[in-house]
Picture 1 (cartoon, one colour):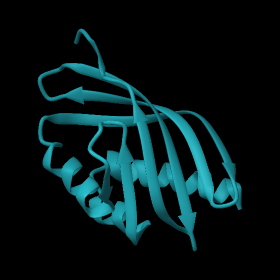
Picture 2: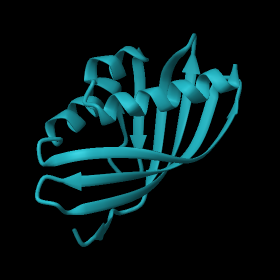
Picture 3: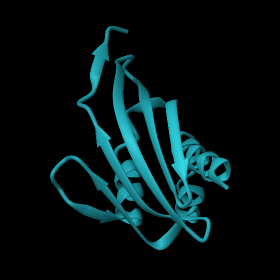
Length: 122
């Protein structure tokens, strides 16, 4: 069961990478909430994905590289690096830790602790 949830967490991120917004939403309950360490509080899954969708235009590619995962029934905690390549060639790296809570196989809560992006010369 834990491996299944770990795989689901990765699949959710792959949908985001590939701009498969509807597929990512379908992996979440209708009442799923998302929290980021940006001081803005909780948002709905719809607000979170719509925000990503609205800001994706200048991004050429985005890849979530999973560093490690830990799981127990109904929960996955993972560390990953988001590698972003902008259309202008700029490179960004964001280190993050993300908590996923699942109920009935669907994501019901995401909490993301992310660092400020670091940049690399193109």
